[in-house]
Image (cartoon, rainbow, N blue to C red; front, side, top):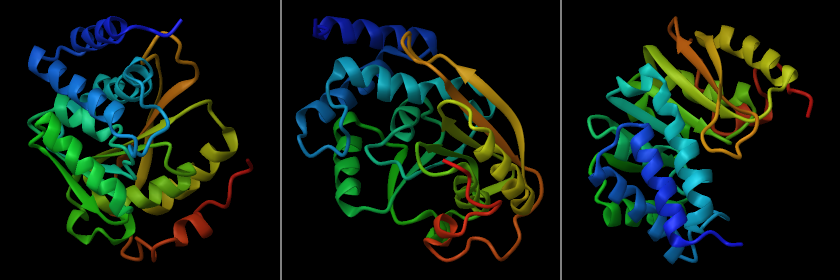
Length: 242
């Protein structure tokens, strides 16, 4: 049976309670869900609020369990797509400036519309690639990445953007030893260090959800970032087995 509108609103209210959000923030999150449901061109296959409340909102907001994110003032969401995880976190963290980085102009237009509809004043859309975003270099307290690329590639995108002491939060599913080994080698080259792999339960049916947290412990060498596209073609640490 398809969940009713009341069901997703109940799930949303549970998220508001779980993360100590205000009723106004809950209303903004509801507006995000409604905007995605209305727009047939929304860049996501999950548009129904009954699904999106879990797959998009709950999976994004689970990062609020990290102290580093709650304390952040500058946050960048790499390859944000339809706005996740950065858009819900911008609503939850009004004190932070959250940059939604997206290379496709069509998706950027969608994001700007949703920000306006939901009244999110601390979110801004950046149309560009992580490797070419010079204005953000060395400025971010936290960088977010969800379902973006192999972990070693994500590390190379994130490291130049982080300030010293800043954190990368990388959303992953089931743990993969080969990818993690390649990422460890990449981290050593980039000035990053793995500080935690947290198994999280963002919603009742979630399985094998993990947040990998890296800290920038030394300055990233000046040779990074490499030219756009090189990190994917020639990832640091070698290409992980599929």
